[in-house]
Image 1 (cartoon, rainbow, N blue to C red):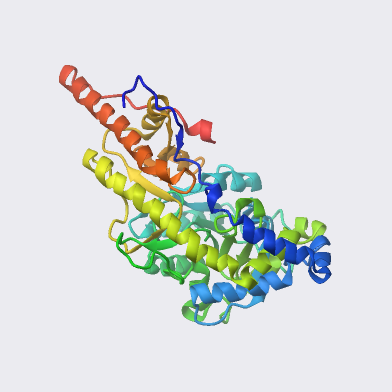
Image 2: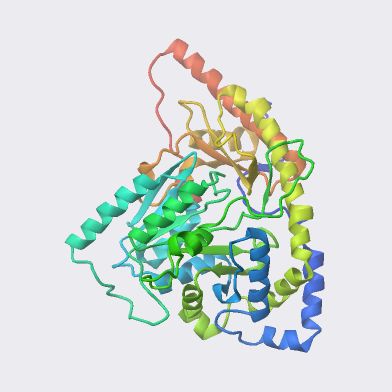
Length: 467
């Protein structure tokens, strides 16, 4: 392939959507027919629902999560609140549990899911989003601890000791700090936060009155790293969630002397495992936190989010169809897609100096692969040239920077590629096209160095476009 002959078909390795082939339309059709054919289900489904959501779905989610995560004790339905999906619920959490003046900062593990930045800014935190770097084990806890201490000292010196904008309510509390992370198969870095870091993060959150909000939306999309594994799926979680650790560590979230709201909440969604259009998710936290989230004004006014779809999803879980779809279809298919892309990366990109994170882990998952480009290559320039020369769309690292704190973490040589959306047969081709771009750039760089040894200037193209 040459730069002058653009490939005919577009390959999109940026879009983080499930391929339409993987949507369980038939199962949802059956579930919806069952729900709408039974007045005992359809009538409450078509009316305003209870604040915390459709009761049978809450109970089924609790049982399902207990089976998958295998916590020390059963998860109760009282810990579950039905939501309109992870993004909508993040906004609800902020409405109930934060004050844009009293809550000091939002600490975001960087690189981050950049659309979350907009949600935080819409809740009054523009200019107070802060990057927390990650290493091979996940979030840099010591960096976070020092930054929290400095932020707390500043707030105390300014006399910021009480919430000023939100009234005192029995179902709510206002946290001093918020921490946002995707601990398992992170978007975009695909990293897994180690168990030790998870425990340390909960301890730090307790020390500084922080609420850790975790998007646990990829947890069930997991498979063995080994390409020769006989079983390409896993029916139990790789690690406990932050909310599981907070529930049990050193007396748990409702230990003596605590306020009972806890310091970690799990944001779950059916978007990645059933379909984004379902607009249905759940929150798990302490009983007080779950109930407090259900008291947000939009739910009190309009009833539980996604009430009708909740009746469909409830049937999917109760019948076992959703679980079978995850373990028999999604996990094996994504495993095959991932391995196809990894094989192409190993063959075409690693010889060019491209690197992968966490290469020794035995379980992988999610939607994405995070790549480090060889110096002095710039991700934004690579992304522009990939689209112009190879009809290939990839995600340059800088778009995953925390808004307003972009320089805290160097993402200039990172790119994200996605294996969930594009047709499976095109994944390896996409990586080959990327290798063509990188190879040409390296050859041009060598020629320039031989002719003129002056350093190459940087470039910046796509950050604002993606925002």
